[in-house]
Image 1 (tube, rainbow, N blue to C red):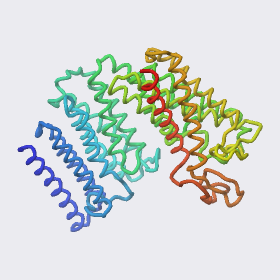
Image 2 (cartoon, rainbow, N blue to C red; image 1 turned 60 degrees about the vertical axis):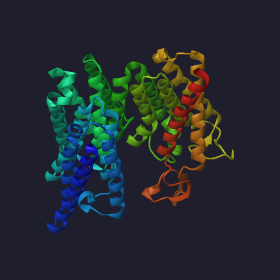
Image 3 (cartoon, one colour; image 1 turned 30 degrees about the horizontal axis):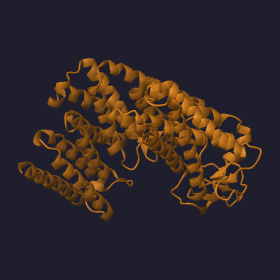
Length: 499
C-alpha cells in the first residue's frame, strides 16, 4: 500500500508540474514549445528515479496507462497546451508514457539500468537535439521523413546519448552487476547513441519519443546479455549495413531516407541474426533492385502509373522489410526457430510481389484485372499476367531456397515441406497484394492525360482526381499487408504442417 500511495504522490507531482508549466506559458507569454521541453525533461528525470522508489512494476504500469489516456484526451481537447503546444502536429506526448510502459514491462526485472538510460536519452538527449537545432541561426537542414531535422541537432543528440549511456553503464548501481570493461562501455555507448540518433532522424509526428528510447534499450539489452566478443560482431554488422546503404544510395537503388532505413534494418538483422538471417534479405534487396533497373526503356510508360520511382524511400523499405525485422525481434526474445520461417515467409511475399511487377510489366500481352479479368494497361494496380505470375512463383522459390542455404539449421523438420511452405506463402501473399490493389488501393485520374495512376500529382504536377479505393491505402500500405500475409501464412503453416 505504501507504493500505491507513492504512486498517487508521483502522479500528483506530474500534474502539478504540468499545471505550473501551463500557467507560466500563459502569464509570462512563454512559447509552448519551451514549456513542452521543460515538461519533457522534468518528467524523464523524475521517472529515472522510479527503480529506487518502487519494488514492483505494477504501479508504474498503471501510471503509464493512466497518462497515455490523459495525454490522448488532453491532445484531443486541446488542454494543457504548455505540454502539447508545438509548431507542428505531434503525438509525442502520447508516445512518451507508451515508451515508459514498454520499458517497464520488458526491462524492469534485471535490467533497470536499461530503463533508466533509455529514459534519460528520451528526456535529455532528444530535448537537447531540438534546442540546438533551434538555437543555431542557419542550421544545415535535412529531411528523412515528413519532419525536417538539422545536422547540428543530430550531432548533439549523438553526443548527449553517448555521454548518458557511458556514464550510466559506468556508475549506475543497476549496471554494476554486468561488470563491463571500459572498451565494452565505450563501444556500447557509441552504437546505442548511433541507433538513437538515426531513429530520431527518421521519425515524424513525435514518434521519436517511442523509437529512440526503445531502439537504445534494445542495443543496451543485446550487449548486456551477450558476451563481450559479440560487440565486435555487432560493430561489424553496423559497418556492413553502412556500406550497403551507402553503395545503394550512390548507385541509385535508395534515396537518403531509404538508405537510413536500410542501415538500421541491416544493422539489426546482421547484428542479431548474422549471415543466416542476413543473406535472405540481401537476396531480396539486390535481386529486386537490379530487376527494377533493367529494361527501363520498356517500363517507361508503366512507371508513370506507379506511386513511387524505383529509387526506394523509407516508406518502401519499412513496407518491405518491417515484418522481417519484427520476426528477428521475436526470435531474439524467444529463440523459437519458427520465427525464421516467418521471416522467410515475409521476405518471400515481397520478393514475389516485386518480381511479379518487374517481370510482368515486360509481358507482350496486356495484363488483366485480377477480379474482372478485363485487359488493362501495364502497371495497373491489381492486374496480373502469365509472365507476372511466373515471376512471383520464381521470386518466392528463389527466396525460400536462399533461406534454406543460409539457415538450414532452422529447417528442423522436412526441408522439402518447409521450402514448399515458404514458397506457397510468398506466392499466395503476392496474389493477396494484387487483390488489395484491385479493390481498396487508392487510384486517381490525371485531368490532363486522363490516365489512371497511383499518384496524387501527375502531368505538370497537376493534382489528380480520386476515383476509387481508400485514400489512405497507398502502395506502401499494400506492400506492408503483403509482407504481413506472407508472415502470417508461414507461421500458420509451420504450426499446421511442420510441428
